[in-house]
Length: 112
Length: 112
Image: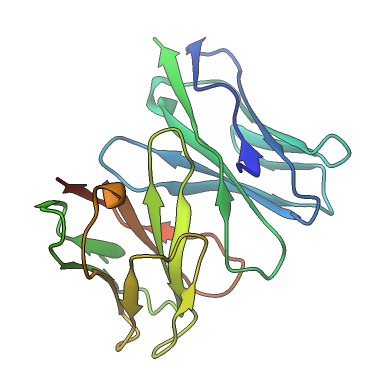
């Protein structure tokens, strides 16, 4: 039973535009959320995180928004660049837990 | 620094054979993890370790054993491989609980 869901397997965006990747979760005990980026033949790399005490966290071109009542988070990339083309995984865990629960990933393609 | 290194990168096994996947990290991290990634599913935690000499079960531990005899190494063993264990295996490490994971580049295992 998938506790973290990424319902869009793929997304294509023009270079310079905004990319919005979505993630939903079902476990109300989750209070720490992360986004990872993965290139082919490489492991996932950490991108940005947010804890449940915040509703927004920003790092350069990347912003994560958290809507706890809707159990939904999103990653915004502005402006999108061709090098952002990768698979993006959403992950969540309860604070202090050792297990991260991952979504199935969204493949982002940024078209030059 | 190499970060997290996994060997081998690829392996093909016949049903019933055994093998060990090696993970090595040079960041002096306390925590280490083994995940598997299957099509249509997120990464799932197999086993983890919170320090040298300790191991614990994750979400999908059956059919696997692990050992952490040295802080920098985390071994994943398959005693009798089954086709259901065909997957991409990722090792990860982190300095403390709740910190973002650093992943290796994965091992693609096929069991025929």
